[in-house]
Image 1 (spheres, rainbow, N blue to C red):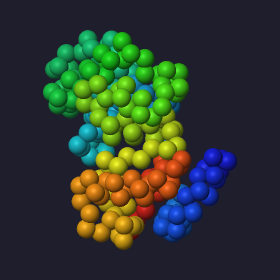
Image 2 (tube, rainbow, N blue to C red):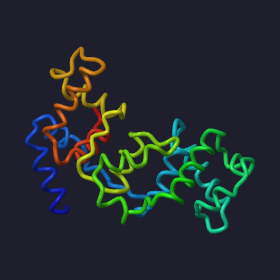
Image 3 (tube, helix red, strand yellow):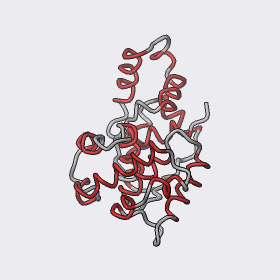
Image 4 (cartoon, rainbow, N blue to C red):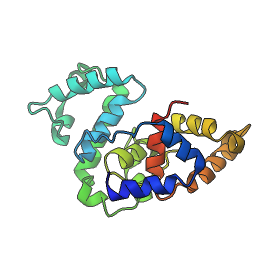
Amino acid sequence: MTPDSAAALDHLAQDPVIARLMAETPDPKVFNDYADDVYLALLESIVSQQISVKAADAIFTRFRLLFSDGYPHARDLLLKTTEELRSAGLSGQKIKYLQSVAEFSLVNPIDRAHLDPMTDEAIVQYLIPIKGVGRWTVEMLLMFVLDRPDVFPIDDLVIRQRMILAYPEQTNGLTGKTLYNALHQIADAWRPYRTTACRYLWRWKP
């Protein structure tokens, strides 16, 4: 365990609900399948939208096989025809989104050297102009590729559902903006380690 993770667990344990949840839940595994490759992670996130993990993996594998070295470099991606990209199992809308990522990356740097000095919110605002990339997508990137420690993806349905189950007294009967405000207030106690808390929430089995 790194000093930062130990500090995160010690801090989060001050919340008795999270302390119980962590005690009941195996340590979340931290995966970074893209070795800090933000561009590739954005492409994969678009392919994965609204389909199962198994289907997304199969389509993304076929998509990468369209390229001679297995990597969809932006200029090579933009040279592919719609028919070629459809052959991987991509919808017309997702093809446009993938092309949008490629076009953006040719004009705007999205490597770690450029993004690391930026705040979390600055990165969100920098990337959401890309078609098909919303706040939730960027927050997943912040958590799983850029390793940002204090991300709270409130738009994630599982996070909201698990928090409602874990904190019934604070959330009972609340909806809409009132619920969001209550969840933000709960999560404020987790700062500056909200990413770790959310990893446990995802893995927790109520």
